[in-house]
Length: 492
Picture 1 (cartoon, rainbow, N blue to C red):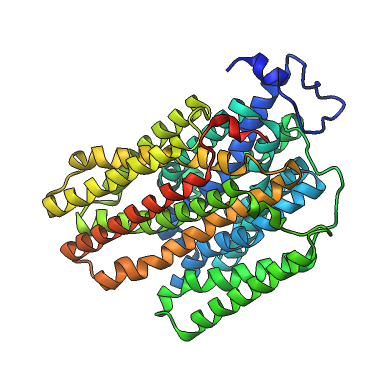
Picture 2: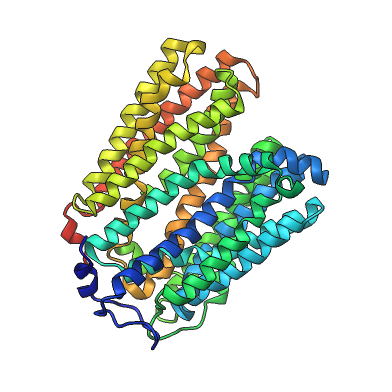
């Protein structure tokens, strides 16, 4: 990519007086620094979803947290994220995406400091909840700002780098959590996993204020408060029973909440239809754009298969093969190396292959999943890390080719004034998919194992999971036909 290509592209953002105009020679460097800051904000979010997992035993021992409190250390973070993404996206559209991103960063950074200083489980859970609120406000601005700042091949390259960050975060979170906890820096045990966010968050604030161009809708409308409450309530009623149902044996209240959630969602959609000319929270006309609707459905399935695959894969590696936690972590590193390779290909091709690239990635991952399943069935307990390297790396390689291009192509035709709303919806889809995938483990995996540590039972159950995931990948491949076939169809 030449700098002149970026210098000459149209800028659809508003620039402060001290920032160079779009044609200024320094603009190319400033925009790529802005991208680095945006991707760092996304990386902080992804890391904090998983960094706590390997530190849970140390946290439990230090704070005296019981099993329910330990579970809420992750739920308290993920629930407000899922609930607030749509509202966070629209806040950026109305009040300025840079401003809202920086506000979310302040909340997230302050909450991270509180996490690191917490002495009991109650304060820690509350701080995790505040972290989730900050992320819900901060993260929709990442994709929205990328969407309105970059054009053509530059945008495809930026989204390719976004996919690479997601790939890195998948492995870096658990590894970083384990390393920082084991290092016991300054005798702080697990606390550095949260305190490390403080200097990083401050860097995002300082650099973001300087380099991220502000963008907003020309006519700033009021926030749809009724829609915000209805959407949040619907998501809570749907996600909470999905997250808690398996632990409680799927009691009647879970199904009652899911039904209520569906009803509230219907009320929300009716309310949005009535407000389409009066600043709705969600612009329903977005769903008339075929590539956005199809891409969002594919994103939902991507979250679903990730929620189903990664949890059960961990159990298979340790129970089915008897690997140690460190050996299991090496397997995740192999998959993430493949993901990084696939994401790098996506970034280098810069959207030239349009939907054919993520579709090829889905097919590669499907073939590797099937191969892996056949390999598990033939080797049983004798399967080694070395022997599974090829299918595992190829699974990661295929998945790495999907994330960035899928986001790029799905949002390509979204009007810039709705970029925040669309980004919030897109991010909500994958979080809802992860919750559905986690709930599906009860049917696909735990219904077979019954929680048994028996290796043979866990191996058989995981093979069943692989057939399900292969089917989801095939369906995701089919949905990608909604995306543009030619790269030039991405233009607005």
